[in-house]
Length: 124
Ligand SMILES: CC(C)(COP(=O)(O)OP(=O)(O)OC[C@H]1O[C@@H](n2cnc3c(N)ncnc32)[C@H](O)[C@@H]1OP(=O)(O)O)[C@@H](O)C(=O)NCCC(=O)NCCS
Image 1 (cartoon, rainbow, N blue to C red):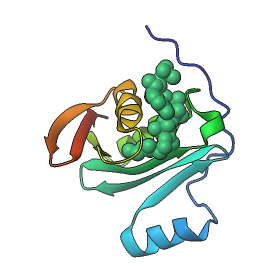
Image 2: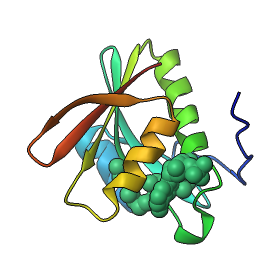
Image 3: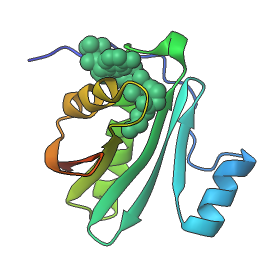
Image 4: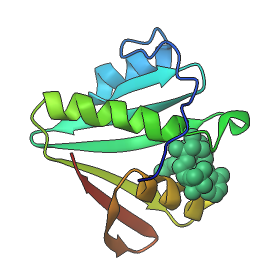
């Protein structure tokens, strides 16, 4: 079994006061889960959950922060009755292999690739 390092995930918040997070929620029903080191934005659609963006401060990377944020998002999805989680990696973005590795580490796998996008799926 892989031992996950415990990251300094402090003060997780689903109701951030950040104005852009409020905009995303009001305009696109996109929720933001954040802590002092990063955030994940996601949307629940019927029985599945889409991860839209994940960001971790450069100095806090490779400590499992993204992993922990996404585990938390999975729990939220599970409570909402979701069975699957989806994500995507843009091959034209900076360091797409790092993003792909982070998703794989969360137990997700490649669903398909179209144009420059790799679509990822995992079970909740
Ligand atoms: C991708 C990102 C969210 C990962 O955050 P993180 O907190 O470092 O992720 P984790 O610590 O949970 O790491 C999971 C795995 O992903 C891989 N990984 C994470 N960041 C990486 C990087 N910059 N380069 C290469 N691999 C990376 C590693 O395999 C890592 O496992 P390891 O530390 O055991 O080697 C972060 O690098 C980031 O914010 N990047 C810029 C934004 C971005 O690309 N977002 C993803 C859009 S889909």
